[in-house]
Length: 342
Image (cartoon, rainbow, N blue to C red):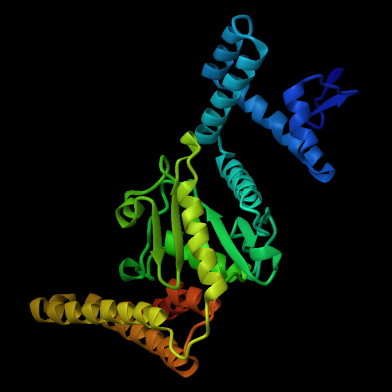
């Protein structure tokens, strides 16, 4: 094997590469032929990251002469998976791969015809949107799907609609990712997976194992360090039952509850504005902005309430638009500019 560094292209070139290693052979032997090249590049990248970690590099040099081949390999796998998963920038991709692999093994063990498919970089129904890392086809049916978003990210909050302020900068939340996944992958149900070591307290307060937000989706909290995916199985099987047994009804009370909660929140804002007017007349401009903001919100909510009452439901795209409230931000900016010029 000859390794050549192409300084012009900043590229590593390897000729006549061969490797006599049982673990590596077995791994690639179990992969489809069309995935082997991509996985080899990924394995090389992960290996370089591992060697760049001082603790792992030290570990490898220490154990190379002290341990037998099998024990060394097992310990190496454990340490590399733990450190790379929690310290490197590729933990998201590894999480998706491991969860999809676990689900497919579970389906096989239970003799289920379900399939977990990685979406990779493929966009979905929403323009240039890749939300929904895994799509599970129930009984192998492409039209009966569960969308799964993997978020091993401590910055992601729960983001319930009662606490959302549509006038601040848009940020991803568990709610938004669940709605977005379902709309983008055109699935019956959506599920978001968190790891216990990388999760915001707002989500832990809502649920410690498995949580359900009516008409929004499921939350599953796993412990990948311990290899505990039991909560994922529970959430998936519940989501599967909903997808299989969902029936069209004249009035969707869960969605109505979401809209009513938003309206209640906005009524409280108007009451707060009234109190502000009575207390401090010098803040008229800010008060006027709050009133205009509340009026915009009420008109916006009324628009979706009328649509909901006419049809009995909202599409997932409509529900995503309702949750984000993006369309009223530009209108408020123009009103705010006029108020500032008074």
